[in-house]
Length: 124
Ligand SMILES: [Zn+2]
Image 1 (cartoon, rainbow, N blue to C red):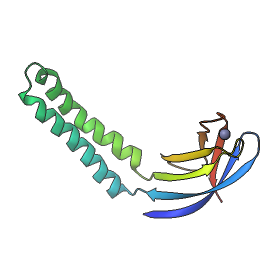
Image 2 (cartoon, rainbow, N blue to C red; image 1 turned 45 degrees about the vertical axis):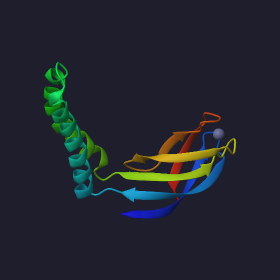
Image 3 (spheres, rainbow, N blue to C red; image 1 turned 90 degrees about the horizontal axis):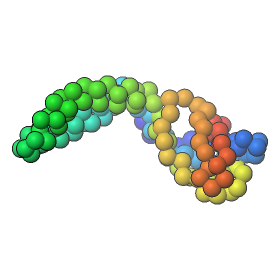
Image 4 (spheres, rainbow, N blue to C red; image 1 turned 180 degrees about the horizontal axis):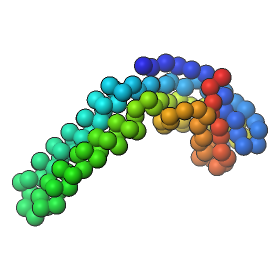
């Protein structure tokens, strides 16, 4: 499910600013579909390297072992998680912040690339 929501950014100095972020919520089905895609890509890569001499001794067993691991990690990472994307001004130095990441719950913390201050992002 995708939505836009207003957020408040608070720097460690106490200054505030606001941002509107695009959110994408992942439910269990979508997380499993994404995990299957990633796991399939890993297995596909392993199977493609069957024809490369010497490399296939490592890549094929590695891909077979990595496939269930990738599936579990990706499905756990995205299950009930929220992906956010947008931009805002740093409350401390007013530099442009490119907010792009994922989290399980709010508040979420990021650092400004310009002044390295810690910024708390929470819904209004
Ligand atoms: Zn800054």
